[in-house]
Image (cartoon, rainbow, N blue to C red; front, side, top):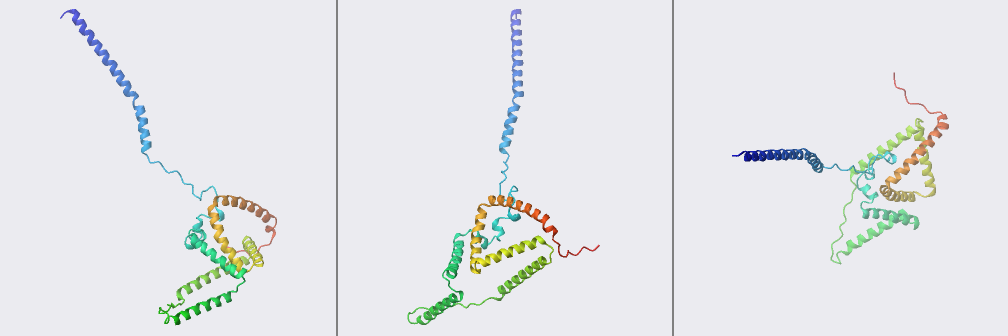
Length: 270
């Protein structure tokens, strides 16, 4: 092999080694720069895989609005959550409309037409007895079965339970009245006197049946409207109660604090 050929081979080997070094450098630079987007893509993939926590639902019992009378339950639960609540809140529109329509018919019958209760009962019993009596005697002539008149009797257990509940409520009311009359709670005393005074005014303006009908109409209209617009009503009521508390504090400082109180509660024994 000549010197020229050896020099040519060495030059080719140097060129190949130079190309290998350049390719290694390029490969290293690509390898070092690739993890950053890979990590970002993996992070984005992880974020996609992670279950997104549901946004907090804004319920009607948010802490921003203080509910009327410190209420912490829905309106339906306040009314017991049963069939009476469904009737008052018009969950079953047919039953609610029928109850309100029946109360309206009774009020019109007794107040507008001026029909008397005893007369209505007597006329109703007369019609029912006469119809059943004629049907029973005519069934043999018209070849039809006689009417089945069920035996009606009042069970003892529900009557005793109702009497027991009524007795407990009366005893509780008497205990509350005794507590108020003892002069220990001036605020409750004023509230009860104001309520009785308002009831006496209403009783002077209308009779008991009209007052009962007004209560029925209010129970069938106010709760359902309040449930629909409770946020606006509670916000307005909160402002009104705040203003009333300020006025009461002024009245208490100027007037009530100067009134002598009744006997205090028994002091704790040392």
